[in-house]
Image (tube, rainbow, N blue to C red):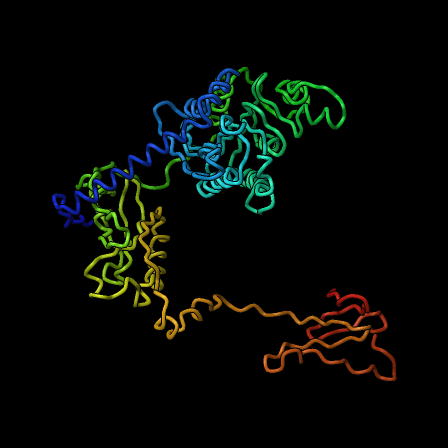
Length: 484
């Protein structure tokens, strides 16, 4: 592979200004993430610990292999929403290594409104399941939730991508052979009770985990029966009587140990199908990325300077380097893994003075050029990394209208489907169906000729009639003809 030669001046004033501004932004982001990681606040955390439970992030860390990282997802979900009452959307999701196997972990944070589901909580949960499906990773659910957040339940249930989608995804993931493991470490109420019920294997903690659709207050209101949460849906009930849970755990530590043991016996480890190389540090310090990216996102820069500080040895095998110059595509390695990179550079020398930032040539728009690059990536079976700096394909105005871009953008792709010729019946009178006519819309139906005096044909005697194409249509004066 060719080595990218940097043209960046790390001593320039613009570089120093960019680095200073970006470092300030990163520090602010890290501060916000640290605050969100505290969950529902000190009072809620103390109450959680008083019940003998591990804090949500302690549960995740104990589940993971010692010394391995945890790639947390959607950390800023629900940020500046719900009056800041749901930090991190009240749920922790991410990818970590458990017993040597990468898994997607979904952990309810009971310190945030009892772990109830806000609309954004559902979206974060569903997004984690999508990542598990795309990468064929087992899912481990650390359940401690009171179900849907009632004041927001009108936004939790109705959408096709909302609460019910969680169970739909669980069923499909299990069908595809992607293990679903639930660890009930607290309340598991209402709709949330289906999470362990639909899992392949489930664990419940004694005197702590409960599974029921309606809790003791609801049972008393409905039937007058007074029953404790443990007797209604505790660990003993679901491991001895109902069979909903598979393993009986004494405490959080024991439950997480059982979960690790389940993952260890999944027998999913397969030899790597790709050839790995020894990791090599980039030739240029990765810290210089702070100075590469301008503080003004509208200001152009060369994306190859970014690639040179990310890939092993700053080596990049560019594909179609001279074609469609506003799109960079090629191959490299990151930590020894072969990857495909697709990026859009904004370089000053590509633009004439006064020229708006837009693509002129079809190849530059990413049309033909992007298709060829996509085929090349698929042929190499590489993991693709997108680096987005997308100014848009065109600017509105008279030139865009004159070129008819709105018409081209709305053109239908793919073959046009052929409409079926249906034969409607009006008041018992059959209308013969023919192919639709574009010249005379609606002229495809015309009255069928009266039957001959010799008597109706055999199909008519059977209460049926035929239409072109050989299909039989039943006469029905009250509804449309039904194809048999």
